[in-house]
Amino acid sequence: MQVSLLYGRSGITVPLPRDADVTLIAKPEMPRQGDPIAAVHQALNCPVGSSGAAGLREIAEGAGSACIAICDITRPVPNHLFLRPMIETLVSAGVPLNQVTVLVATGLHRPNLGDELAELIGDPWVLQHVNVVNHDALCDQDHIDLGQTPTRQTPVKIDRRFVQADLRIATGLVEPHFMAGYSGGRKVIAPGLAHADTIRTFHNHRFMSDAAATNCNLHRNPLHEEQLEIVKMIGGAYALNTVIDDQRNLSLVNFGEITASHQDAVAFIGQYCRVSVPRRYPTVITSAAGYPLDKTYYQTVKGMVGAIDILQPGGHLIIVSECSEGLGSEEYAAAQATLTRLGSDGFLQSIRHQPFAEIDAWQTQMQTKATERGTVHLYSSLSPSLQTLTGVSIVDDLEATLQACIDASACKSVAVIPEGPYVIPFVQNEVA
Image (cartoon, rainbow, N blue to C red; front, side, top):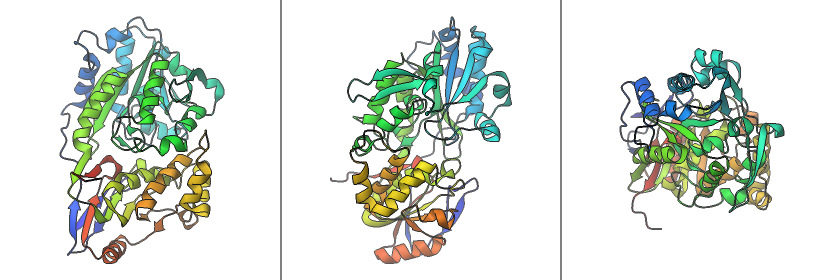
């Protein structure tokens, strides 16, 4: 028997021992939009929560400018399906074409340029007709300071091109997120369009260690609550949300007020991405969801954390991630170096009282959740010099590693999660 896991652009096949007791964990089959373009137009014409009287064209009437925020290259958002229809609708409502900006919500990630930007946009017409720019979280003058959130006093500085636009639209992909519960909607604004001070505050140890800051949970999730406060502080926004299946086919698209439309998309994907299993497993093999998410080790951590709820304490977690671009940022590499030097306890102690998290150190903090549960084994294309900074066990033979994990646990039960962090398994009726 063998299983295929998402890995890079082409995937990877892993042979399984013949006598292994394998549980394959995947989303139930999701509906697909037979005519995705028609579905986009339908969504733009009939916003979530409206009576059908006011679509995007009516909403945009009288607006002199519009800013459309899109996710960066780390998310497989089908921008090619909706950007041009959205822009053409805005223009038909009277918004001047030269006053439409597409803003790449990079957060603290690197900018997307050249061929990568063209791939991200997916439509040459958009690049030729509107201004497409990258957000820069470190550029002070690009942001408007709106003060602090009322409850947790997070400094709120958001890209002025978005805040000052007459019409603000966030677009993205709604999927499980290991800190904010679900991606999409409000998350495209913060951290996507936020200044480094904002991002570093609600990614500090206090936020990241909160038990509610986890996959598929919005209830009392501190990141989610701060994001909603930030939406209020900028004066609201609209959102176009998408959901895709495991083959990247469009399953859902909606449009509307940012919170209502996001809740609608969350209710939809929640039926599929949360998969119950009867028990925990001593051996789990998963992925980092393939390209584009597994371009860096930084993003790989999401796959580790997504699987830990079904891993037996002291068990073995095997993850495949191409990591074609290496570890990630220089700041992340520095955080990983601190982790490997001090160990998990020492690293966590070093960041515990920082009001501003070091850039990308939050991903290192999240990794400790996985390594505290069990042994993590990584199969990737990382060079030996970078492998030493991962803080996990490096393997180059998946079949042999899987057999060794089974032998070590003296149990032939293996859970396989081909889609990685896009599927969040949990133990049904588990007693705390």
